[in-house]
Image (cartoon, rainbow, N blue to C red; front, side, top):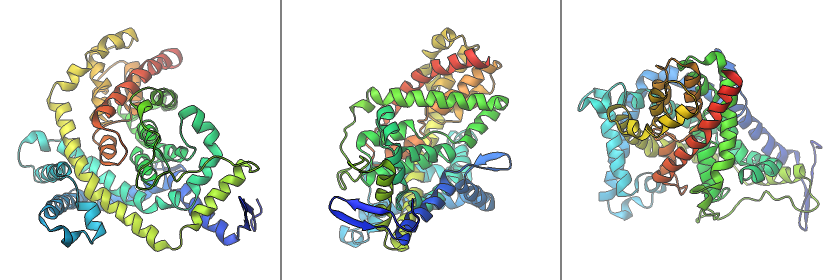
Length: 461
């Protein structure tokens, strides 16, 4: 490609790309790739540039985050309640207040529950099942700080991936692979890579924004969010170490990848995902165009789409403003739900026999797959719906290494867990509900469990 000029044709319009137009696409996109998609090793841990910033901020202010976020959750609940009692003409002129605080009664109640749980946990008051080290403390002191810093930087820098043409360029380039294999547009590969290198929540966040802007249909957004929001390599290593199988990490992660790819091929082709509508988010309609016209090479069409997208950004102000709004929306809108639903899920998992009862059907399946200690391992097959780390907690006490190996693989390939991903999806405009999430969780478990066990038996044990 000539750095100074790329011929540009679109229908009857002819022109040229100036170096300024190409730079507007290339420079922000390259920075975005370096921040989100390029793995780097820091202190023997594989992460990304965004992760370095997030970890650095968390290390600097970590002790203060629980108290700060408790204050944020109280503001979220109080603001939502105040809007319910104020006359509409007082706040509707303020688009920020309307978007953040003018919500349904159900969500107001959840915000109040989240704020209450945070206060109880911060001050260790009320029923101990809420603020114990196994429930509220896990959410407020372990999960919320990670989400706070990750979403801060992800929201601020996400426009580098979305607004300057990178998604459009990659979408055109890899559409021929993504579409027949996964029934998805090519740009979804960026979501998967952002999850793989950084965080599953970042992947869901990308998917949500792309859906709301008209680049994914309802069906595509549902498929991507429930099949491509994979855990990062860094978190996978944490799981492996916790289960004492980190000496098998290459084999372990290879199994996760194989299981994940097979599930991503199978699950979208069966209900409920196969029944999702192919229509787009109503307020914006379809905005995506990845089909390569006659007479265009794939590369040239990708560049054309990318440069046109980048050209729509006239100044940095609106981009920064949009990023800050997403930070506020996550902190005030999503994290209260994580505190509420995440704590409830952990209370159910830790202090009730529900997941144990639900796991009974897996005992004969695990025996059939010749996995030792099936009865002890069975709850790990189902408890991941509450939180991704819980299967590892259960599996850590199992002696049989092959069983711990399979439990670790399942924890990472089930993908949907209510303490984080599930809440994010329910809060989003993607049309998927709690029952559907649980069904997809079970489907992923049934599909990937025999594959993980077979690979473990055939190649590693």
